[in-house]
Image 1 (cartoon, rainbow, N blue to C red):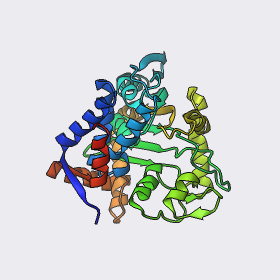
Image 2 (image 1 turned 90 degrees about the vertical axis):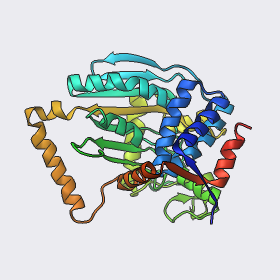
Image 3 (image 1 turned 90 degrees about the horizontal axis):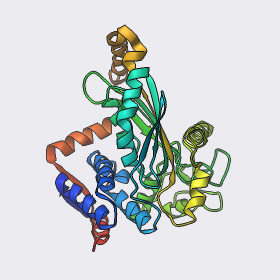
Length: 337
């Protein structure tokens, strides 16, 4: 059995900040990155938790990520632009979110376009932040060209996650966040680190043949989920979060990386919708109809997306602790030795 290290939430936060600041990140960026890393670890999303410190530091050491302050601009009545200036996306999101929320409440719908950013994080904390404002949220982003289109064998798409959040009158929002690839890149990497095979249908090797070898998958191409349907969604996200906002496609991000294995460099598109504006004076009625949908799902024993995360969140809140593999802890500590 793999040995683990148990950390209090305060210790996990201190470990993340010490690692990031000790490797040249500014305090503002370190705080923003740590907040989303801890959210992932808290919810037992291990591929988006403290493990991500490894690639954040590697990207910083490669000289590929800046400490620049984001430039927030009121680009149009329904559009906020946040130029990350070569830094990670999370501080740009934090700085742009208040104006995005204001515009959505004023007009009913608004967009935030984050450009020139490195992006490593899950999208569910980002749409949850929109839902916390009482708004419906949608987020999408490309990555590196790791994923083959349906019927192909070479990477064209990124893992291209899509996330959605619907605020609810009581309790946590309805949220889904999934890669349009069959699995997240980080999941394959965690299998590789653990020496475990990946499931069939996740990837091809460098010869274009199906593989369950995580190492071969990392040097080959990932597959889309749902065949041609996932492929079409990936293409939509490439267009919406690439050319539409004036930023890189996954192919361009991969070329920009030049083989250094850094965090993908591209943009992100987020939409915020005010349900009260859309529903008018009938907000309570229509919000109730949405709850009837959720009741019809769980009432027959089915699960809502994010239920596993919310259960993990409750466990973490009760214990105040998180656990990570001992080897990962050692690898993180070694980053500041």
